[in-house]
Image (cartoon, rainbow, N blue to C red; front, side):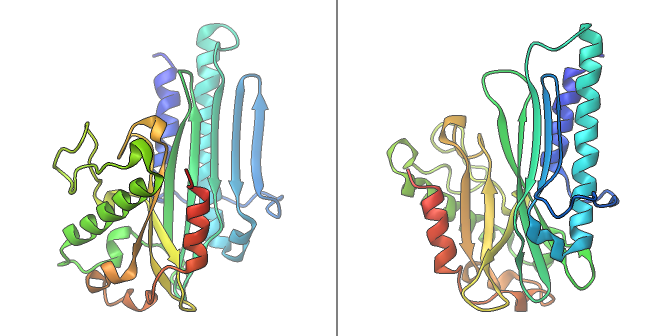
Length: 271
């Protein structure tokens, strides 16, 4: 079997990881952001963990273990492709995984990260991932757990679509058009809004101490626009979904996303 499909599968594994694998030990150099890096011929792999994650050692161990498992799989696939080719490959093979600083409430911690992979072709591919973590139970929280079992999730889907459209309009130019207003409808081109629970999200820093002010949805390329349009960060304020929240987690949200956080996002995504 040609090894290139295995390489692509390893990169896709990172994008779809649901934090289900057992944690591994933290590397001895955990005080540094770069937990692992390898440069081996035309292959480069790297795992970066924000230093602030050291405040949550079990969460960090899980992220480190899952990241290293995927990187080792990727490296093995590349080496297999080299063996089949009888030498060095004609293209760079790169995979990097970065987890950012956590956002915390009294009971929840969230972190989001970026996966970057290049396995040949015209360009590399970025993608997002995220985790919610119960800091008391020391376990991952599935996105659906935040909401009541009987909640009408289409309300959250519509709020996400509104946030995506606002982000597109803020960029102006060719991006200032709406994808389909709701999932399942066809908008301009082939783009349509994703379902909220199928989209990676983390907590939005809030304007109330110890509370999240909303959810931050991470939209990769090709989802609501062409590759050239880039990625989107769509912020949905807590007021848009507070009635849908499970009683177990409802008290972790209050107020609105902090103005400082929103200003930083605007600066990062300025056209």
